[in-house]
View 1 (cartoon, one colour):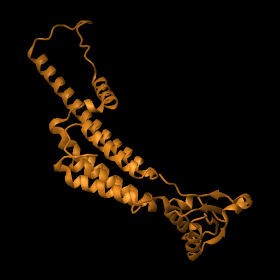
View 2 (cartoon, rainbow, N blue to C red):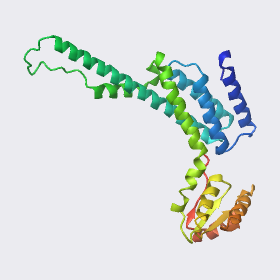
View 3 (cartoon, rainbow, N blue to C red):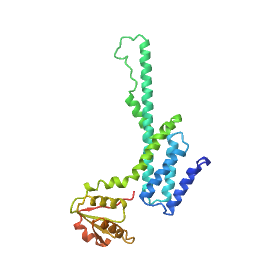
View 4 (spheres, rainbow, N blue to C red):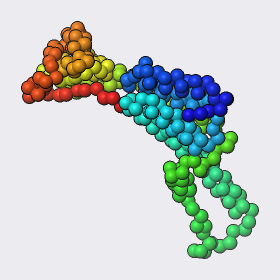
Length: 270
């Protein structure tokens, strides 16, 4: 990904993140997703663009560079797609406003001209058959969805740029509060005297189970040790420290104990 000299800080930020991804200095959803969103925000802020197509192309190019650096980090592609959705959504909103203003202006001019002329007695064929505002808006939005690059913004860039940045900031805030938000739903899903099976090491799953423990609800967790990393042993220790009845088993023993299990809760990597 090559950029002009004016985009040198952005290029440095991109190369630094690519290097850290390749060296596994940044890994896992909790590190990779926020860093990707922050880089996308930098692209929107610092890259000079005058149309949605230019911004979308740059976001896609930078996103492709990140994916090549760490193809195992599925969240990179998902975050890039979320940012592209934000861009398209804000541009669609601007187009709606412009169509609204344009249609209102046309309606006002027509009414003014009609007031200046003596109106003839209307007949069935004298009524206007101009397209309605609804059809105008629908056509404009369909055009953007099919070919967003065809919509040139000119001076409207600054008008839509800040809402796009605000949308990405909301995404970053959402990522920061994700663990808490998911954990708060735990009491609705885990009930008294249930047996829960989990495996691996997931910050979200751990917070999820600990949130139920705060309700003093009695339940049991079976943790597979997840060889060869044996991350399950560390998770089992931390769960038992907060008073959760925890059993550590080998991966091979999962089949034998499955009949006792009410729910299986695992982390996701996306």
